[in-house]
Image 1 (cartoon, rainbow, N blue to C red):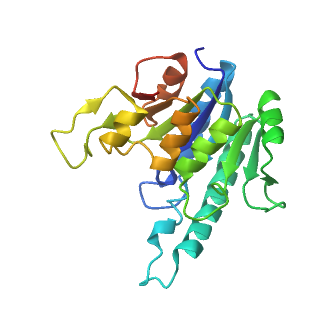
Image 2 (cartoon, one colour):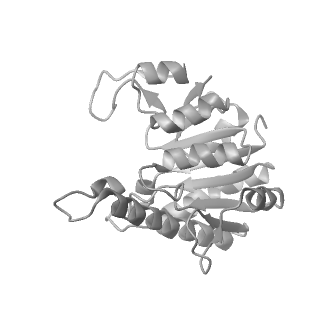
Length: 236
């Protein structure tokens, strides 16, 4: 394997079922199988998942009566719910897992401590980071970049619903062009929506590459870790 320790960034929207239920049991089983393939190949796996299937902080506005800070706090709690669902699914598939939260919720998750997270990974546990960075105004993309660098991940995999990075939204524009490989600087200059600027800067400054793959194509995550050309690569 090209990489030994990876952090997988999942969107909360991926958890939505076809009939609109916030947590899709079929997806949980599916992603457990994909992560299981990594572990069987000796890969240490950490995960950050969004909370958009439950609540997005950016949804807070004057019409809802919620300010941005309250909305972001609600979104962070949504990621903890998703993290617990992932943990339960992984353990049901015979894989030990632990949820570590940036907010102190000791009855349901460990408080994030970097050294403890690394120890869990070395012991063969899947580590799921919940509650984002623990602060409002930061996205879960930034949380993924931060945690990946803190634990010394070799690669950050951003799992999406499309095949990789495009110069514009392929769902809206038929002439959207696929971008196979690009540098962080180029992605910022061209305003490509890889991740938010804070996340990109964290990865660039710490020389951590980002691989963007379609999570719904079976085997894609393992291919990314093998160094296969699937998806798009953002590099320094």
